[in-house]
Length: 358
Image 1 (spheres, helix red, strand yellow):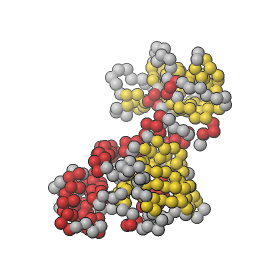
Image 2: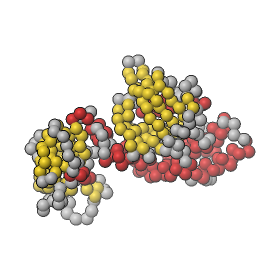
Image 3: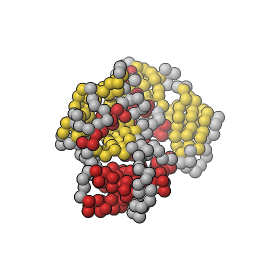
Image 4: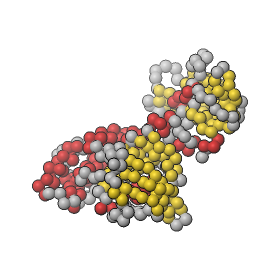
């Protein structure tokens, strides 16, 4: 049985189509991230699942049951809000047990369930504190414990880590994934943060204009985007534009608008193409022939930024400015103004035909 199923769901607001004939399934125990920019329809999708909005057309089922006309409290869904929505006048234990009380759990079992949940999120001994006495990360874990306490059929996480600072957000991503895995819940993460989606989800739905532009594993979405929108939205990418140039030395070629010849690992049809290369797939050198069997470009460094674990370079080349990301290893650092060579392998080229430029 599918944990969640959308079948041709449409939702409009006035003349604006927020969700456009949207169809997808989520398997039990799966974590799916709905990812996209502001206005793509992801928040409306979450509200449709939760029952805060009703679809204009189409069907929504949870665990095989139609949700048509079902109110939010009738859907057995847990919702982790972006800003946690903890009750400030209640203790941690009272917050965690709030849903149990209203879901008619047997009174003798509630204290045991609260202890289980606090142990799960590593907050034993915090039961008598109030939210104002907790850090942001601790409040997030209390809110998660409250959501999971009632064993919902589906857990919705609305930008679950966005209220935290960058360092804490990075630390809690792994912890959140472990907690959700431990309880085996089915989870929908709604976010505009690529890192959040990539680290938490088994499968990512990239939304654009009210529809799913592409779905797949994090590896698939990042390495094999189907459209330019997906390639641009997930991570950074350098683009080369031009015409198919036949074959040379057994390889298909792209002749860019600047006249650069780029060897490709797969054949392309005649016509206009865009070729994307991720910044971390490019190698930068100040001398030598470059990596063997790779495409080679000449350029000059115009920006060099030390990001701690990485160096980020911007190189001016014939086809425009190209971003390169390299690990911060010991050795000679390339400096602004240095002439350099860029190399990248044919198999690291992402091919997007003109028909899929969006």
